[in-house]
Length: 394
Image 1 (cartoon, rainbow, N blue to C red):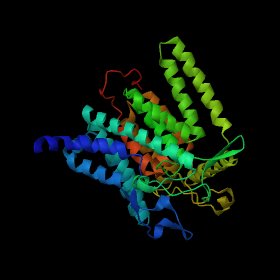
Image 2 (tube, rainbow, N blue to C red):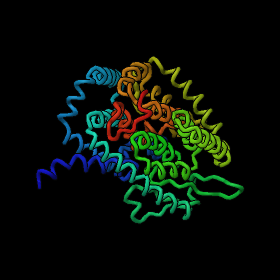
Image 3 (cartoon, rainbow, N blue to C red):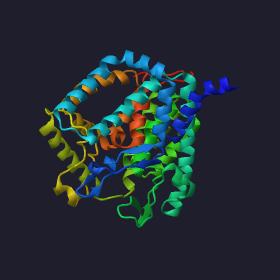
Image 4 (cartoon, helix red, strand yellow):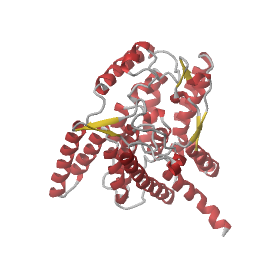
């Protein structure tokens, strides 16, 4: 019996990893580098999450298989370590640099774990991820009805405390009615929407259709324009792949409807202009520092003149610009080498991931986003958890 339990431990951990992947329960630390102009910046706060503990347990249990994956991808990893080593030697030593290196290391570790995962372990992870969409839908509906957080047992999953009167809280207006957007256990509704948009594609391609319903509901409940348009693109993509003519037209109609809905919701009137302004600054910053050595942690918007636009102490809302702002010219080499991790990623997943990355930063700054990128990188080789893989070719 003990032997059987030991054999099932990895499967249990994969289930818990999927179940708790959207959560952010953890212990925050506030060293000197996490303060900017005397203000705490959570993007610079080292945090030990419950999902980090699960990741460490998986590494310990599966270290032999992970070593084999390291050997297979040794060239890519050596290039990354060499670049980091050179930058660390010639740049001033920084704990922030080390912290960001650890965060990128999480992506690599998760990718290596899922690259060697068995079909049973992947199935367990997807079951956990699907169940997470169910409880997240319940929480989001309660938050929407309550006009704020629920706390209680939900605090254990990392739900932040907020009300409609909380400064900077995200809300939308529909026909003059103000609605406080649900946060779930995420730092922002946009993060929740984007997370489940990408998760939706994995669940769909692997045949977990029951889980796509709550995942789609969470995208709509987030009231995120980007995620809602992304859901429309998902419907359009699957419409073009289906052989059912009636299904194709229905899905194309849903695509058009979702795009219209995305622009009916009225959030911040300056969000588009702020994002474009930040992109402009991001391009200028990357161009100016492109040929320098990597400087991990160099991704916040530091220009004081942006304070009036509400963008001060925020990462650039574009994961690609953010990546190059940290890795500089070396980022091009790493991006080229890293494509080998994604070389057989299903086209649908790749497109939605790039779409989300182009409009926001959380894939590289938030725990849930970092781990999700690692899962997708490790999922590059289509699994056989079911025989229904009609869109798996890149």
